[in-house]
Image 1: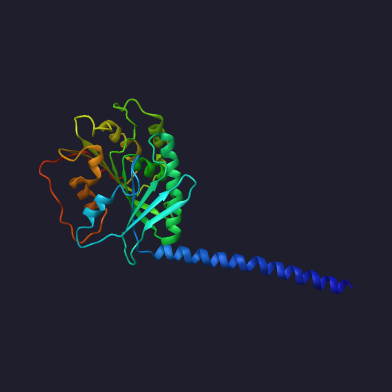
Image 2: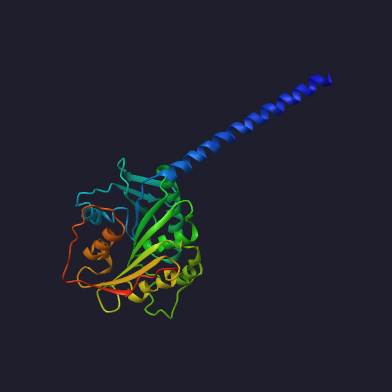
Length: 294
């Protein structure tokens, strides 16, 4: 009788062990395949984040200009709803190594609390993208508050060991909100400064401001854009701050500004055809020379 009971116990234990091992092995193999796919991925997308009050179509005029040459970048648009549901429009062409991906938000209001929520929503969409496309690095472009969303994402969510942001371009991003003086640091700026050590040191950042007037781009003060130096300078590999003057330098015009497009073409895109547009009525002032961490 005891022998039968012992055999039954052994059988039950064996069945439970197999039941536990098989899912574990399946999960392990699946994880290895995912990591291998990510390691071997040749895709390096450019992720675009619009500013307040803008939707997923914000960059359409920009993409039209950037896709006017021989190299065509496919466009995938994403809107993250307040319930974390992610909606997709468009697609990524097979073998497109540098597609454009727009991540926008249903709640696109201005304000620090919304920016923090958008950084979390951005991470939701980003995680879906990395699971679907397995890329291991990307570049990013953010206009206005979009640059702040990307900055908070770098500090609060991005795991550079798995998927690294290599280059970041911000345009008219108000790091110190609408303050005209760098001596008056807002709560948002102080929070970004406090978290700056989490930003990957291999990142290259290009901070662009417009100067419709001597002190602002018509909406964001120059001093607020320049406050980004407190977040990135001496933390990332390269930090370059540029101010454009002349035509098309108002806040809403910056994404389509020819000089800004040149910066994106030269420093982010791998286009073979780079027939840059020049506008003699514009000037660029390098407010800070590139800074390299040793």
